[in-house]
Amino acid sequence: MPLEDYIIHVFCLIDDLYQDLLLTCKVRKSGYSPILADSEIISITSIRKRIETSISQLTESFSINTTKARSFHGLLGRINRKIFSYTTALFFNYQLAKDQFTQLELLIQA
Figure (cartoon, rainbow, N blue to C red):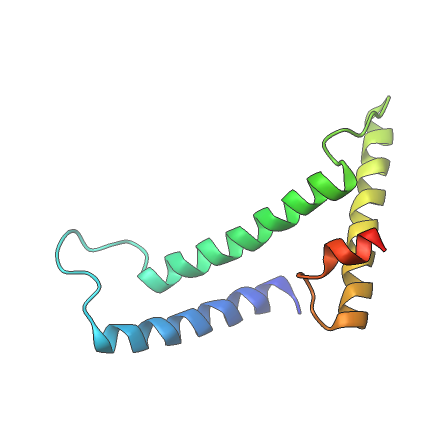
C-alpha cells in the first residue's frame, strides 16, 4: 500500500471513531479553536509512532547507527544494504505470517 493511501486510510478510520466518540461525550469544552482537528492530530501521532518504531528497529536490529564506513559512498552503500535487508525481512514476514510488523524479531532471529 502506498504511503499516501496508508495515511488517508488511517485518518479515515480515526476520524470515524472520533466522530462516534463525540456523539457520546464532549471532548473539548473551552479554549481557543485549534488549527488542526483532533482526529488529524491523532492520525499524525499514530503514523509518527509507526515511523519511529521502524527507525528504532533499524537502529537496534541492524546497527544502523554504527556503520564504520570510510567514505560517504561507503556509508550510503552500507545504509542501503541494511535498509534492503530490513525491507526483505518485512516482505518475508508478511508472506509467512501475514502480519507485517509484529513478528519481525522472530524472523530476524531465525
